[in-house]
Image (cartoon, rainbow, N blue to C red; front, side, top):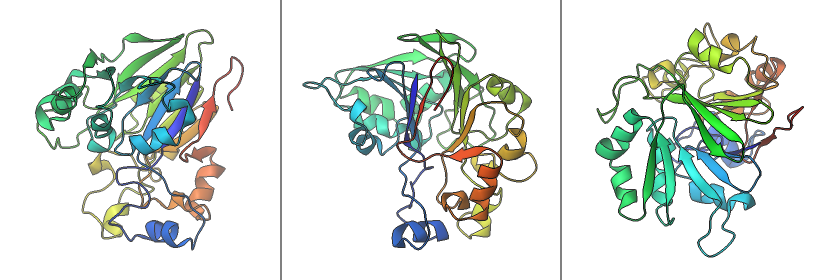
Length: 303
């Protein structure tokens, strides 16, 4: 199994077009070591030939062009077979509009996310005006074959974040995914958005070889401290890395071979490679994703 990070930043990317925070200034002027990033999305494949997207960011076209394995291999022939959404956030779903030239593809979402895409922000009717989209309902806890020896299982990620469109109801507003190589039994967890790492969420990660986890903010009050927003990280639906109940604390004993932060907000100081926060993350055995990062699963190791 191969997992490729197409985009590692949160909504707006890094730098964000309308932001002059220390990180965005540094990536623009080169004053500190850091790399630009596109908006969060991952691609998964069993063989490097047929691919599934986990979220479709507004940067999906550029991400496909930057990834030779995702480019067409014939006239309108594409190796992309399906898109799995973790939620209906615009930075995870607007890329669906850019896939409208496809002949057809499958969309896997929960019923709650489907309702939002259909009735709330109208993304799905717009795409369907251009190409057929086959919807497959994601039911947390059910094992679903992806082909070529891969399966996925979604798990519910509780959130109290306000629904912008008023159509997201009950469980399934946000999910994570466990993708398993049936032959080896090895699994990767993909969790780009999580408000709290509850015991139930933690249980889903315990036996995974690799975990890609929400790294939006370093501190819970990061945005208010910078004068950029009034909401805390948790109020925006994202557990902070540091502090009591933060992901560094909650995932400290997780025995995954690799623990990788994705969905990094432009304000997060770990994006600056010389920052003390970055050193602390690495000291604790975590990695900070970059666009283009790959994790390959073999039957006895990862790299």
